[in-house]
Length: 473
Image 1 (cartoon, rainbow, N blue to C red):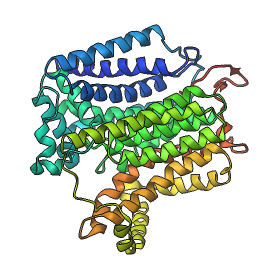
Image 2 (cartoon, rainbow, N blue to C red):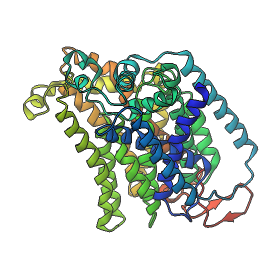
Image 3 (cartoon, rainbow, N blue to C red):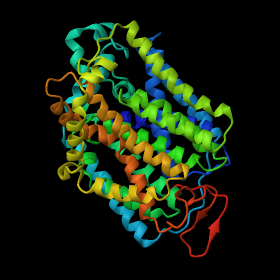
Image 4 (cartoon, rainbow, N blue to C red):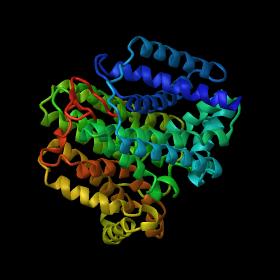
């Protein structure tokens, strides 16, 4: 019964997400299967968690999941009526088949590791605890949870995308089963591999580059086994996948008249602050990149509306926390000029700690060294909007994250850095894979933003091209 319940919960998430996907893209636009699954999952988890929160303001108990299920089914009906067609498939090469088998084995291992390990500290006491409280209270977090200083350790101010995705599983299971909730996080690993494969195909025109990078995901310990990884129940890895989708879509949107991916960018952008509080910083960076693309590609002023959904979520959540009199984290001092100037001496030690993390082979292996090579490649293409978007999306969040420790209230602020910097870098690490993909492609003579035109797919069969097929995997 648990397997059927999980299938129903995941199915409704994917169905709702697919319906939203078909509303965002043109019917004539063709997407690969991996891309459809990836965006359906991201949009579905975002939509269902938001619906549970919004409907929970008015109803609770059995009526809450019933209403959300009805919306999911309606979106599924829309998706069925507006079904996105799959692209023409060319025969895969033997090397691509080999890489695909490796990726499947790695996914199976990640699922196994997830189920044999318990949730980590934050997975239990920051995220799952919210799902547990909400399930016990008819799907709504008790008002006392937000204002109770005794529960401040669980960060009531954190947003609800991950906890309410777990809550959705609990509704289907009929109980708060932490073991089954573990399945959510390796699913995000699956989605991450699908996105890397898909975007690799789009950016380079070659499937093997995306498959190769997807296979390398497994060999970065911070992604697979370390604190905050895909098996620990933390929100950091899911946030990194949402950020990958946001920046990847924006990179594709730098192509003229590619409105489909700009709409997908706007949707993923809106969900960044809903996944984790740190997503607000990522939202600011990605929104600034979006404004740059709008201005650089001379799009109409109506494209600035892409920022509105995210602003509504940010403001709506802040208003809700204020209305609930939510306790605030004591980890940071007030952000003002006096605090900054009094703690400016921390900048150099913080920089040193960041560099040490880049050299932490036990957590990252050679990942950041390879990313540095990719960055060196992109610096030669800095004038292209796509390259500038990727470099900005990688470096600016790291700088902003580092500056937040200037306001740390911990007596030993370097200990604060040591406990969390690896998880913060995990947010931007998937963008590093996009940079590596561009660096390893053999089509390096021209602008990387035009390595693979969205309307043209070079098939695996020698000398053949099909247009206007758009395929990501």
